[in-house]
Length: 326
Image (cartoon, rainbow, N blue to C red):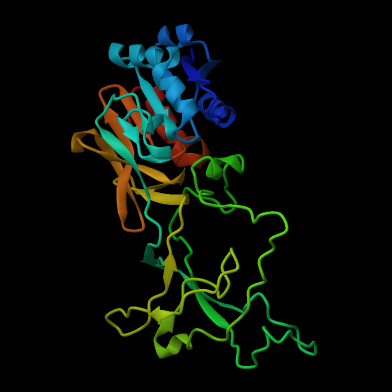
């Protein structure tokens, strides 16, 4: 007989894929947005892929938040996924500071911008040309003409050893990332005020075999001229190590310690817990080590998306269903 799991529809999305994954591991799933039904449930999964803000505050302060606390305080199994895990803590710095459910002490912080890390083993060097290079035989505008321009070399990281990942995996919808806040700070130009096109100012990097590499293209996504290249570090053998820029949000497959398996993440904020005993699994992004999974008694949260993590994710959900923890 399938064990019944209540899947909470709190308006934070990500329901269909979680429901399919739970059914696949043998659960009988009941989807509801009724706080009374949630409070009466004996096993609850609370997913989410939104951001802290008005919607989460309504949950925390309203009947749904009270129902979740009833389940948690009663000691019944509870799993929060992504935003569902973050809501277990005291709050988040997102959107000026928001409150959580205060089940575990700690706060959500944003990954810092501007981090650079060494590319993983298996990284390859890719030659790229400026986007505004004029094909041979065509005249270039005066502002773009530069006969000395040369190809650029960019370090591109390729993750290796992820037996649980498959190429092409992506979030269920484009809202996964945008809901995490990565589009912050973007503004449209006023009507009639069209900015001038970016210009290419010539080569900014030497050949890699001279000891220099670069982590961005000459024209970034906003049309700005890239920063000048900086010397790349060398390993003990004296060979150049490829570097790459750490992007926010964190989106993709990451190894989770101590499991050795890879899980799928989409988030701009990570949990900074106050109690080390609440942390079950860890992961790393750039220079930040952060909790990938937390646990206190029968209450559990995972920052990754098990429903998008293929075999490893299904093992995780199956363990939760059977009363284990992966």
